[in-house]
Picture 1 (cartoon, rainbow, N blue to C red):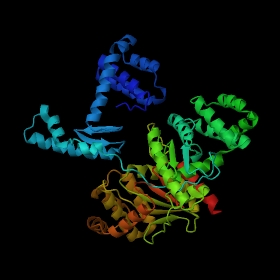
Picture 2 (picture 1 turned 45 degrees about the horizontal axis):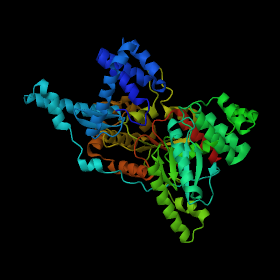
Picture 3 (picture 1 turned 30 degrees about the horizontal axis):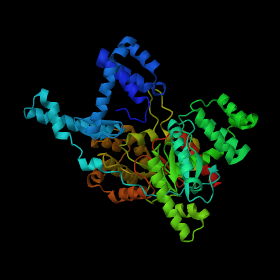
Picture 4 (picture 1 turned 120 degrees about the vertical axis):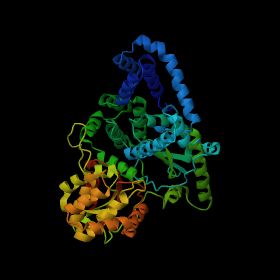
Length: 547
């Protein structure tokens, strides 16, 4: 299902289909794996090379290419008939599964399907008709009305502070576009002509603000951001925007030699720019944008806010204009009602989302470890059955059998900071994890019986036991720590601590927790099984502010 905004998707799909047509299934899957392993190097030259590795010659490639193209197109058309609108999407015996779901989601569906298949076979369905019978049981054709429905318009306003960021346009413009972007991101480059057109069409009614969001997997994004910030320091906002235009024109060529050519073209002092690059001179200023992006839930680029309203991705100009026109009309009404034009943006985003999180107190019933008077408090909203929670808690082996350095963040935090941090456990069992709530009750009962020290030992054992969290597994943990198993079992069977668990989930929801693991560090959110460095950065920032 090659999406049209991924320029290399269809040629890559055609190459894989050629492997299938020429040499069959085994060749297809080898080329498939090769393509995914080399997503950054998709080209005609490499397709030919990878096909040769499975015995498909250049002559075969040329011979089958046309037929393969037709089959890929037919596959894409079929996806539309099935109501599939994005990737990845899976049909398991006709049952739709959308997105990169965790393994547990797939295994739960497959287990249910295996049971259903046995039932059908028991009723006399022959193997040759089993797939058709399963699809009949699970496939749901999207209703025409549902297909025609548009996503409800998001009218949420976010409190996006402009700060000291580079600006283009008049300060009393009625519409402000704040763009979080990355100079190495091809989608960010794609949106630039749209922004230029908006500038032409709306003139003094619109202004643009740049925020750096260099993505970690773009190795030249941070140097590019530093280079443009140096341009701003040398030649003001005008210098920044000229450097901005030149970098996008140069992309993907963003090495120091390219910067030197741009510096000379713009009349910048290259020696100073070179020194800024070597010393990461403006990294702290750029980090302000990165931290702000985190608070505003910006998870990719390009990500823009039009008077505080989100435009995510390289959207067509029609969508931009619709939003700009709506916000322009609202702004004109504010001015007519007496708001000075230069205050319109401030008044529009005041009270919007993305400001400081509501205060999050520590319940008297919550297990706590670390320094009693620590200046940094980490509240963990977690689920004992969630594999990502386990990754965040404990070091796990990588493909080479050694500990994966991107796992075990909480153990790393304890080792590095000791009593400088206080860690608080909050239960957030997810509904689709059938053993999460029993495990939560079990751990609370352990806390009630033997205190915080035993609780954290049980907590560790529960994650170690994962995915084995049945009663027999929990009983073994209870015996290991001298717990009264009868009381533990009763707590699990009756959901004894339901009120405490629900209080935790409610508190999490109030500060924006929607999944696990989620960490609130001195009022700031850190979501997911992040590597230790992400926690170190957040904690160091919190410690610096506490001083």
